[in-house]
Length: 487
Image (tube, rainbow, N blue to C red):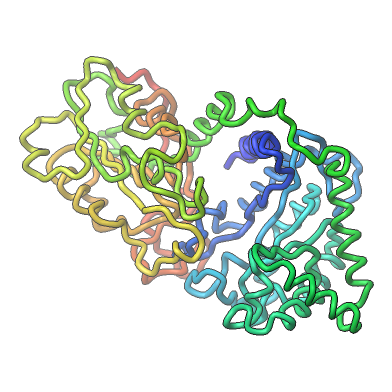
C-alpha cells in the first residue's frame, strides 16, 4: 500500500484531464469490494476499508492539498492544474448480494458505517468536491432515493458542503424497469438530496418534469436553492467562470514520459508474487536474462487492450494493440533480456511444440477479457479459454512462470501445483515494462494482496477477519525478492 504514490498518480491524472479541457474527474471510486464476482471489483482498492481509506490520498492528488486549518467538508480545488474529484458510489456499492452489480447491500447500520463509509470520512476531510450516489440499494431502498443517507447523514451529519451527483441515468433506475415512472424518479431523487443529475440523452424531459414539480410545490424552492448553492460553490472553487476553456499549454502533459514512468513504478509495486519455485530453497524468480532460448506464451502476452482492461478508450475496453500507445509484456521481455537470448512467442502452443524446442524456461501470460460494470459480473471467475490449456500444456512440460492479468482473483487452484512461479499482475495498463522490471530482477517483488484469493467460488463471499476463512492465498500475502543483476 503506497498512498503517496497514489497521490502522485492523482496529480498526473489531473494534469492530463485538464489538458483536454475537462475540469472534473469521476474519481476516486472508494468502493469496498466484498465479493470478487462483482464486475466493478477492479475499481475498488481493497476488501479492507482501512486500505480504501488510506488510498483516498488520491483526492489531494487530484484537487491539491487542502490548506491548513481549512474547515472540514468544504470543497477545495487548488488551481488550474487540478480537477474536481468525485468520491463514489455512495454507499455500499461493493457489498451487494453475490457481487451482482447495482443490486442490494443487505447489512446493518454498524457494518455499513464500519465497512463502506470510512473512505467518505477521509475524502470529505480532504476537501472532496463532489460525491456520486450508487445505483445499488441498502436493505431494499435505492440509494438514489435514500433521503436519510444522502441528506440526513452525508449532508447534515457529515456536513459535506460540495454537491451530490447522480450516476448515469441513476434516477431512472429508481424504478424497475428503469424510466417506468420518470416523474416519480425526479421527485424521489431530488428530494433525497441529489443536486446534479446525469441525464445523457433526453435532458428536456428532466428539466420540464422538474420545473412542473417546483411550480406545483411538490419540490420546495429551498431544495433547489440548496442544490444551486452547492453546484455554484464548486464552480467558484475550481475557477470555472474565470477559466472556462482548455489550457493549451498543458497539451504536452498527455501521455508524457514522466507520467509513463510513474505508471511503470505503479506496475512494479502492485505486482504480487504468489509462488516462487516448487520449494523455498529453489526460487525461479528473478529469471536469468541470458540463456539460450525462452518461450513466451498466452493470450495476454502481446495484447495491450487486455493489459488495460475496461474503461480504456471505450467503456468495455478493447482487445488488441491498436487502441493506444504502450508496451506489451512480450515487448517488455524482449527489451529486457540479453540480446543473445532467443525469444520464441507462441500464443497457445501444444505440448509437442513445448517439449521439442528445449526452452530454458517459459513465461505464460493469461487472464480475463476486458469488461466494465454489469458485463463483468461473473459467477464462476474462471480464466477464459484457451488460458487453462496454455498453462497445462506449457507448465506440464517445463519450468514456467505464469502471470495472471485480471481485475480480481480468479480460479487458479487447479493449476497451482504445476506452476513453478505465479504472479498476480492485475490490470497493469500501458506500461508493461514494469512487469519485466521485476520479473528479471532489476527491481524486487514487494506487493501484497489487497484482497483474499479464494480456492473455489463456493467460498464467496470470503473476506479477511471472517469467522470462516480458508483462502488459497490470504489477504496481505505476497512473497518478496531482492533486486539483482540477473545474467
